[in-house]
Image 1 (cartoon, rainbow, N blue to C red):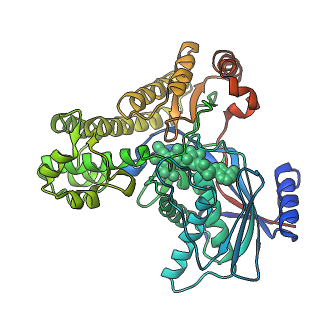
Image 2: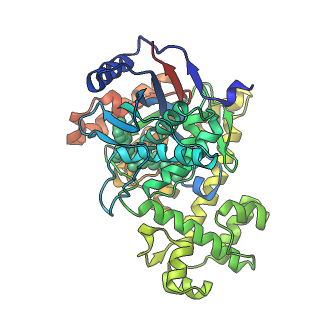
Length: 472
Ligand code: ADP
Ligand code: NG1
Ligand code: MG
C-alpha cells in the first residue's frame, strides 16, 4: 500500500503542543469524557493562481502552520455535539440522521457550525452511495487559529476537519484525493461555488514545498521554492466572509458565461462546456496565449447585459437562470466577461511562469529568481484589482507599501479583504519588511491594537497537510 496516498494517523499527540492540552481540557470540561482522537487541518496561502481553480486551471498554494484542531469522541447515540473553544462560536447539537445546512440570506454570515455540517454531509452521501449508513454520532471540540474570513482558508480547514472526522469514525478509507474531492463538493452546500484548491492543499500539502495542484482528477506536484525566499503574510484586518455576499459566485458565473459565449462565437457547442479549461484545452485545443487572443477578439464588450446574453443564447429568463446562474446571482443584470476571462488566462500564464522560475536549479539563476517571482506577484495583484475587481483599498495599500519597500506582493485567497502575501529574499529583509508594514500600515489602523502583531504579519513556511492523532 502506498502510504503517501493516505492521511497520516499518529499514535500519540504531541504532548508539548499547548493547543492539544488546552483543547483536551476544554473537551473534558464540556463533555465529561476524554477525546479519543484529534484531527488537525492546516490553512493555506495561495502563492499564485487566484480565481482560476473553479475554471479548472492549476494553482500553487502551500499549507501554513495555522490550523483547525478538533478533539473527538464517538457517542452511544445518534447525536452530534459541536463546541468551540472561542465563545463567539456558539455550541450546536443535532442528530446525524437529520443534518440541515442553513445557507445564509444575502448580507448575513452563515453560523460556523454549518461549515462543519457540510463536511459531515459529504461523508454521509459517500456512505449512502456505497450502500451504508453513518454509525453513531460524535462530540467535537474545535480550536482554530487561522484568521477567519481572511483568504487563508479557515472555512475549508473546518470543512475538511469534519469530512476527515466523519470518515475516520465510519471507516471510510482516508485516501487524500478522495477526501479532497469530497470536501470540495460538500463545501459548496454553504452556497459558494468554489474550485477545489483549498481542500486539495488541506490534504495533499507536504512540509518544505509549495504544491502545483491540478484538477479533475485532483493531483499535486511539489514545487521547491528558491533557497533564500521568505514568504510573508500580512492581514489587512478587513474581513470578508465569502458566503455572506454574491461577489464570489458572481465571478464564478461570469467565468462560466464567458466560456460559453466564447464557445458560441467560435462555432463550438456551448451547452455542455462548463469550465474554461475544457474549452481551452479540449474543445479549442490551443495554448494559453492563443486562448487569450481569442478572448480579446471575440469578447469585445466591457459589459454584457442579461437581456442581450439571453438573446445571443436564445434562452428565456428562467432557462438562463437555471443554466448560467446560482441562487444568489439570479438577480444579476450585468456581466463583465472579457475582463474576467482575461484575468483567468493571464493568471494561468503567470502560474506556469512562476513554477518554471521556482524550479530552476542553477544557483546563478536563483539570484534573480526572487526578483522575477516578485514581479509576477505584483502583476497578479494588479490583474485581481483591475480586471477581476476583487481587491480592497486596504489590500491595495499593503501591496503599495510593499512595492515602495521593494517587495512584490499580492492579495491571496478570494480577496475583498483578508491577507496579502509578499516575497522577500532573506530573513533580514523579511524582518525589515515586517517593521515597515508595522509603521506604515498597522500603526495607522486603530483596531490593530486589539491584535498581537505576530499573528497579523508573519513569515510562513510550507507545512504538512491534514493529520489524525490518537489520544493517549
Ligand atoms: P476564509 O478565507 O477564511 O476561508 P470564509 O469566508 O470562506 O473565509 O470562511 C470564514 C468562516 O469560517 C467564518 O466566518 C466562520 O464561520 C468559519 N470559521 C473560521 N475559523 C473558525 C473557527 N476557528 N471556529 C469556527 N468557525 C470558524
Ligand atoms: P477563500 O478565500 O479561502 O475562501 C476561495 C475559494 C477557492 C478559490 C479562491 C480564489 C472556496 C472554499 N474557496 O478561497 O476555491 O477560488 O477563493 O482563488 O470556495
Ligand atoms: Mg473559505
